[in-house]
Amino acid sequence: MTDQQQLVGDAPLRRYEYDDAVVLAADIGITGDATVDVVDDTAIVVVGDEQYDFDLPAGDARAFIRNGVLTVEMSEVSH
Image (tube, rainbow, N blue to C red; front, side, top):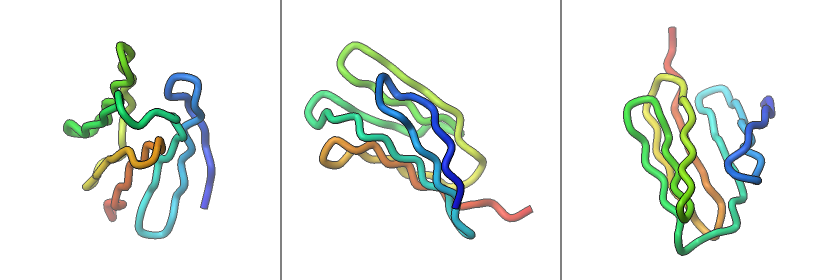
């Protein structure tokens, strides 16, 4: 597993790489006024009036916010 960081607002976005999947996670601390969508190879996070987007590796992805934690789970594509 490797851990690389970016920011979603003030929250660090951590990337964890496993043999068959990649997981991105950030504790955004907001549960009510936050949404996340995956469009093609981009995750779009909206928190209040702010929007953050970041590229995802190719593959199937699902994203959700639960208890203030943004999670994006992606299956790795074999080359």
